[in-house]
Image (cartoon, rainbow, N blue to C red):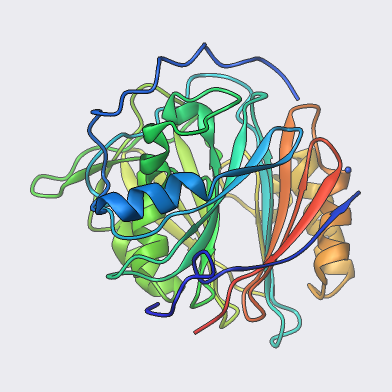
Length: 331
């Protein structure tokens, strides 16, 4: 958290090759005067926007956000009803190398690997679906990119805390008087910036009302470098937490809180994940985790990613088959 950014505290190690549906609505024209959550000076804005580069024909972009932002202001993503799938798991069978992995299953939109290191939060690497910023396949120079920190669909911070989301059609979140309300994607940014452990992340969820309006309701998987994990769900309007009791925890698009394990395995993707994690004793390196994600990928899987919660290694495979590797310096 307070280290110089390499373009932002994240070292690009390697780009290699290895692994799609509805198009977003055409974006509105870029507006240099649009409101953003940016708290940057003019030089930081320029450095941020000029750091953007296209690295994959998904298309996939990379960008380093330089400077500060207000995570409580700006735009909120409201995913529209669509095939919002996703498969996630945390594996800590090797305590020295706990791992978080996920498939993001959604529409064929451009994506971004985003590096952030805000002055009042943890450095992070996260993945953003750019369609929710209103930008198109070529976002070069678009100031709406300055809101990208607000929309992580999964990510990890320098303390080894990772989080990802998935649709949960039955979830409902009733507002609690006195709590501020944030979007159902925005909460991931608050967690990544402010939580070092699963317990701290759960506490952050508990301080906000979540807004599921305009999109599918969600549930969330959390994991940390200490091998802890938890699923956060909203059952009958109330936040509920199912903590990992063994060396792994998985999540797809079926509720898990209060559901027996044998019933969860009726879901095909959950069943495949559970069987392999048990067989492997929850000891998976990144290649094995990516291979497992490949077994549960769908026709609209946009990316598969693994986060090394102690090593800081990130491996990303997009729907094009391209693989990229990153390392987030851990603190």
